[in-house]
Length: 488
Ligand SMILES: Cc1ncc(COP(=O)(O)O)c(C=O)c1O
Picture: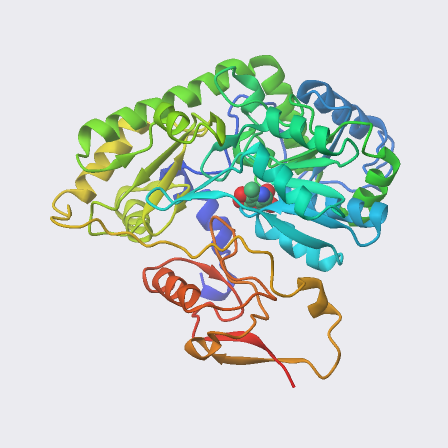
């Protein structure tokens, strides 16, 4: 057939996808109830006899209430726009409630948090976090560091923590929430819990935000909670959060044409987890444990993060570790994470969740077969064989300053006309104020932010990431030029 009439995405999904061992999101529960005829049953709110999402009525209200009961919340709403959409809803809530609030956010916040702050005119200040360069892991802040930041910014209206971190480290969340309450009992604690949708189904996993008394939890159910890509949930408790305002924030931001199939997949994942969540999560924990020990045995020189050691090493900051994740450091080998990821996909049909310069992250998912750890360890061992480094380890360290922005990002939106931006060659940008965000993706945590000064170290790090195959989200993904502020 002529090339013009092909549907390459359809062909990819119907064919090749099934050949890969996917240690990556979405983690979809095979045994969850399924819609039988996806194309034949696609409907809109015009068919309103069983309720609508726009009114949170009928089957939609029932599905939300069932989810809230399971996840220990007073209310739950479904997102068909991932945690990114949920972050926007919650930020809209803050803006409707406080006008132009100030929010203290952990430095490992996802870019959606900073974008939403900027879009709603919300000022943010960073809570510092730790960092392990070898495994490329953010280490959560201590309870004291969170309270110290609040003390520094007494006008703060809310706290937003990204917990667990992308790498699966959960802070000492219960103590942190308690410490915030002791400091100021009115401040809402919002937890971006995108990576924690499976936590409550095992006592071996960290506690959830709802369990420790936080006010809002944002979860990407598609990541590790069993539903289809793009889906998530917002859970919250009454008290510091006004349900009517949250509903207003939600309905003002959610599409009027939500996919009922995505909503159904959230409902289905909830139903399955309610029935068999413990068994399903236990299985992925054991797949990850199996991969960890096989990699440790079969690939000498490979760094394999041991959850027990992580707890010991960062005990003042870390209260629990996600046992479904396997983080490996490649600093003893002459190959970057970006390169090994490509080779694993192309040559071995194995897909890690995330590649970084020094490391790779594997996420044990519900869809993996039982022999996945054995096949994956074999694949990694064969690709790394003969590439061990003799001398020093290879290590690239990102410049993650924890200083508050030099310039309020929101000022950029309200710039007087005479302050304009310009594109300059990357090296010429050093010392200037960035007018764009530059975000390695994944993990989606910005290195450069609009309104921040560009340092030589930012340029060098970003160039190394680009040259070694990392993906950058910015205006010029080739990173030849950068948009900066031009002052008159
Ligand atoms: C901590 C965190 N928050 C939010 C998001 C955005 O999630 P989603 O892809 O569901 O929009 C991500 C995505 O990786 C994330 O890691």
